[in-house]
Amino acid sequence: MNARTLLGALALIVLALLAWELRWVLLVLFGAVVLAVALDVPITAVRRLVPLNRPLALALVLGVGALVGTLLVQLLLPEVIDQVRQLTELLPQLLGRLEQLSRGVRWPPELERSLLDGSLLQRLQPLGSQLLGFAGGAASSVVQLLLMVLLAILLALNPRAHQRLVVAVTPSFYRGSMQELLGQCRHALGGWLAGMTLSAISVFVLTWAGLALLKIPLALLSALVCGLLTFVPTIGPTVATLLPLAIALLVSPGAVLQVLVLRLSLQNLEAFVITPLLLSQTVNLLPTVALMAQLSLGALLGLPGVLLALPLVVVLQVICQQVVVRELMDRWS
Image (cartoon, rainbow, N blue to C red):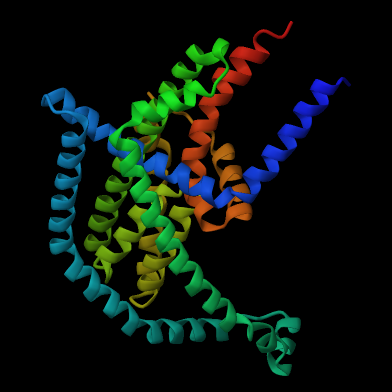
């Protein structure tokens, strides 16, 4: 091993350690890139229709988005707040129903002994301190989210300059390929965002209509949760189903079965029809790759890692296809 190879290996190790130490900064930066691409899609569409420069197009998109958001809030927020209030009132009834069901369940002897001697309660005592830590983490997450939005607006305001910066720090022999790679990453990420947004809206509308037809209480709140968690594929829809199932438990066992059939039908429709149809022209992620990415980044970075796992995998898939496969593996003889 010569001195140049050793120096390169040490530089890579130092860069890897630095990236790990700055992982939260890099996570915020990548989240800002995702939001910037989400803004760039309507900005590009507006500039095709109206001859506006980018700052004016960005201001128009933000203004229309704020107007639409205000209208949706005025229409849906009072009903959502009322249903959240009803949910808090129904929680004691739900806990009582679960207690009644638990009486008929034969628990393992070890669990019964731990409940009787209080050892399980002692293990749960640190929960209070964990909740305080969660509150502090939530405040930090709000600050990170605001910073992410600000960075996204700055990136969307002049994406060409930032793209030229990335190309400039690339070796001269690879700058043309880097320009192409950045364009493909933007196309794939924009297609994924557009497809997942339409998929989430479809799940929200269909779930709301289905629960309303079944006369399940709090249909709007349940549908909103199901729609939002569509952005967390594989794990999100399963977690979202727990809320309408719990509410249906207060109605009747038959209602639980009906809600379960409805959610399973919609999950399969979204997973095998809606999402593949919307993403067929941009990105095609294997379910195993998506699940492993969510589990890995969730273990490393927590909830933010789970939320950003899929867009990160979309970008990494393009990079692997263009760099690893085309530039390395296809030329390996």
